[in-house]
Length: 420
Image 1 (cartoon, rainbow, N blue to C red):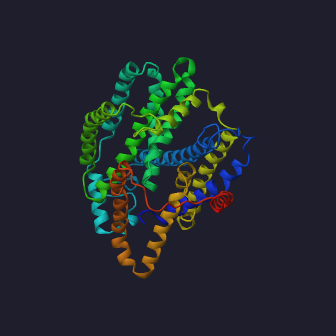
Image 2 (image 1 turned 120 degrees about the vertical axis):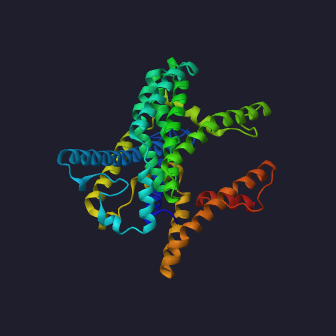
Image 3 (image 1 turned 60 degrees about the horizontal axis):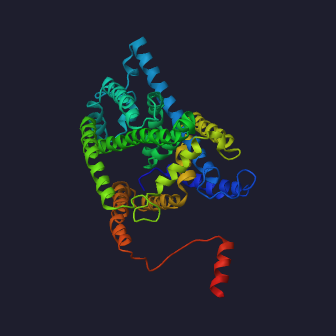
């Protein structure tokens, strides 16, 4: 209900293309493209197609928009310096580069924009801070993880800003942070670079942690700045709040982990109360990663190239078509999310769009005013329910009704078993 219609339609379209068409067709190639003995979570099997095709689309869309924004910014600065044209200046607190679009904004939006752009974070502070953190990481992390060399960290910090932009852009569109996806990319890249003989397993896992912290922070800051814009809070105050929260987390998180580590002897073990299933998944990924991209299933890289190019082509067509027709062209970033996560939430999001669409037809004023509040209530209710759900799960309470969707063949087997 909060996301634009085109985002939800793009998510649904991506779910149809991936889970409705591509994955069934690729699974029919089992035994030819990849071994039939592999499980559904193996990166040498169907899971490799899911993850890396999604990464290819996300990178294609994110890098296209990154280059587009960067080129427009540089061209605007060049034009401003060369011609001293006030009309070509970038937006600042008192004026904008697009007067006509500003005139259509409400008073509240104009006030929000003016206050948000008034207290900007200096670019030199941002660049200097990033360089300082990179230097600290290169100096300290190799002493903690000896397999993670300083030049691995340097390469991560060089490429991380572009990936962080991609993650922040995708999170702004869909509210989904795909930090773990970019972490998987670091696993395969650094793990293959180091090699199994030189501690590539630990190097890949440590590199994954570094990459995930960088790109997840970008999406978190994007959400904080968005909240600050809507609530008329200064971007600097939101940034300082993020620093304080991060500093608290550096103390609280290790203490909580140490508490669990001391309280449960089998912490992280399969079948225990806290099995940490992602640890097994990431370990299997890095074991595959140290072998290089050649260990991926047949035609996986070819499909990645195709979808990377398709994402760039769709964005190019969208820009050339103009606003009138471009708004009907789907967004590759939104389409890529169900490729990896699954298509289950696409129906939920489109159902929210349908409710909002009908509501706008009945009473557009109320829909515009109360739609975000209703959506926020649904999000909060769903999130708060996780706490009692966890308590019920720890208590061993089972739901009275279990609903499951099966294929026609499996359903016939179940009916035959129950009938016997």
